[in-house]
Image 1: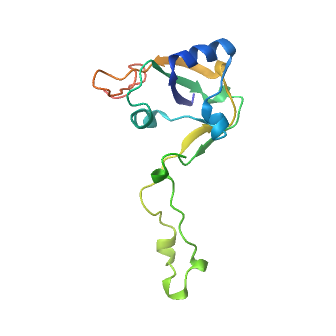
Image 2: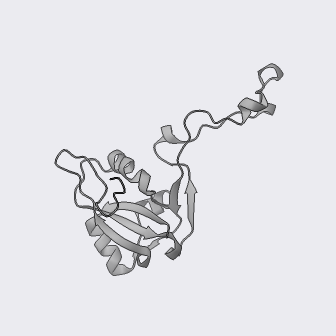
Image 3: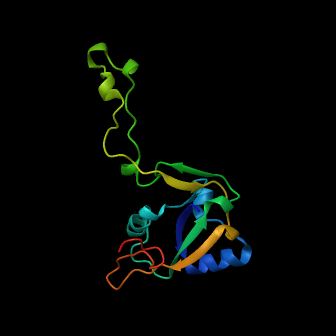
Length: 149
């Protein structure tokens, strides 16, 4: 089973469970709901949920989703967006890239994030994990998801 994760306030998760679906604000503003793979959860939490309490982490089975799911470059922050490289045909002859360099990525590789293009049908949620930062504000994966020994 392939799973993805979404952080949200506990009250929003309760409302979604009752209604049967979840519509994040980003569905209206960005056209999709932002999700993370397990290895991305803590960085997303640190970047976007610092100082927030009463959060949960939805664990979602992708095979149960009704809306389309796409893995794409992050939409925020701009510094993580992939850099578009010039095409050889757009460069002056003396400045063209050799074939060895033209295929190399510029900068660090960007991670692909799961984006759901429609509401989350709540029956795809296989677990709702409490997701609170510790007293110092540091997030940790819930024990059920912590794969490190």
